[in-house]
Image 1 (tube, rainbow, N blue to C red):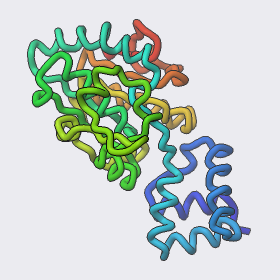
Image 2 (image 1 turned 90 degrees about the vertical axis):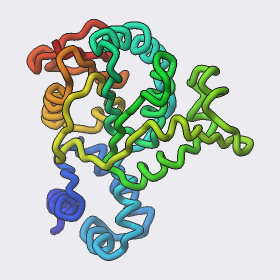
Image 3 (image 1 turned 120 degrees about the horizontal axis):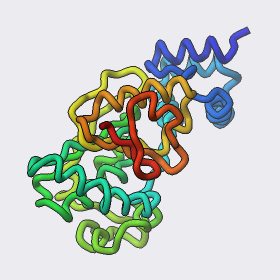
Length: 259
């Protein structure tokens, strides 16, 4: 009988995504719901269909990679970033632009938030943020830069006024000045080589879906990606269990510093 383990192996061959690194119960629940929605009969039939149906294959990837995001998610933590971490990083950079990476950036809310925040302290044309996600479709959506009111509700009013144009009753487009400052690229945190030389890395609200072993590998890779003195900013439910063992110190909740 074709079981979930076989399905996982076939998915890995097709997509490069290793389902064994995700929490199985959560992932099975999501995949089972997608199979039911398309009125298919189990994992084996589903694999056969996504091998030939490109639209369903792309839908599967988008569904598999959880995309929930909003601008300035957890505003108190963004205040800590602005008031405590950025001054430290900018002082250490001695006038050069900060090198910043928004990993698992989803619909772009986070990297665009970073551009707007950094524009308070330097000319916006000096700001650059690298943004990566495993999901090609979601990157394309991020590059469009169109959001609803719920997505931008946590943003400071100064940014809403300066950088957004209202298109309809509940549709807002981010300015080209902000969009031009983000370099989007596809990247798989569990498989691809990590870029290096960063002062600040954000990876928020995605680690909760991974196994502890997978998290450990990702955090160690982020450590290598950071410059000495660099900061990793994680999500509000994502405390790092082995921070000391990896080499990080932490002076504020959800912020980890490479000495």
